[in-house]
Amino acid sequence: MPGCPERVERAFAHQAPDRTPLFEIFQAYHPIYWDICGRTVATDQALCWDAMAEGISWEELTEADAKAFFQLHKFFEVDIVHTPGGRRYDFERPIKLGDKLWRLHGLDYTLNERTRLIELANPGQTLADSQKVSETDLRKRIESWDGTFAEQPDEIWEVFRRVKAMAAAEGLDWYYMGEVGAGTGVAFYPPFQLMWLVSEPELLRAWLEMVKAPAFHYTRQLVAEGCRIIAMGGDVSCDKGPFLSPAHYHEFILPVIQEHIDLIHSQGALAVYTSDGNLWPIKQDFFFNSGTDGYMEVDKAAGMTFERLIAEGIADKVCILGNIDARHTLCLGTPAEVKAEVRRCLELGQQTPGGHILHASHSVHEDVRVENYYAAVAAYREYFGLAPLPWQPPGLG
Image (tube, one colour):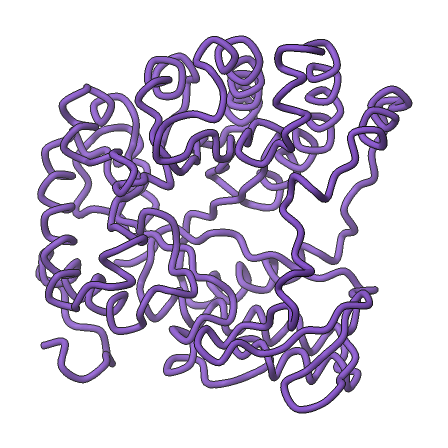
């Protein structure tokens, strides 16, 4: 049956399950929702922004989000569900300016006809993350931090709670995965913060302490809400390797990762380390010294191939959540090419002691073709002798 806890637990324990567990992260408003859930305020971003501008209630949005999220995951018969987010009661509402045009926070937004997502009308107004943070302001925050932090309002959990209730009502025992970072996603550090690694190491350590406090608190909340897996860590590498030296990773990042994983384990949950990019230069710390149970965002295009993960002994120790190529194959390949890659991925997964969960190398994001994700699930179901999905795009066979 889908949503089988034993299947997931055996994969993480490196014991062969009845079949490879299935997991996926679906980007909000992706067209994959439409044939299953229809075009609603929960599945079509333009409809959502229009509705918010017109005064739709928090309650109506929350129920629509939960219903669509539940329907999609039930349809694909996943075993693991990535925890949905939620809105505050006082969420910001856009102002409708015209057909497919809105204003939010003083900036104009329009609909991208290709992705069906809303984006800045003037892309030049987009600032890189590294330009959004003032070094002076961040330094002041660190120096004045008194150890306190603002908690998230309780209503942000409501979508997740509604999804759990819907699943329980239909006898679906999903494994839920929450996600939280604790300042270790080095790829998002502004340049001055990378310089702190060398010039002001104590300031960087103080910043990490400031970020850890709410992150660790949120981790406890996620587990308390029902998440049995916590995805953590964050991007530390690009295609060419880590954004910092292996020595700096070992000195500054690894201790926080180890502390976070220890916390997750103390709460009775499993830890999954997430990072895109080429991780081979920090292989020992990332995979072995961290204590992680799983590795997600397996970036095949950056050289993190399943074959090498097996050859290097990583797949014997760490559960691999991947690795269907979400940069090339799922975006640019044909359904036949997707099916071939999925079958190869499953065959390689069978070479490990059960430690494999089928998942895209990142997510079903805006460039992933709908027919290609259906092809991936069709290949999975064919491999294990399962009945076809009740509906799929024409031509998949």
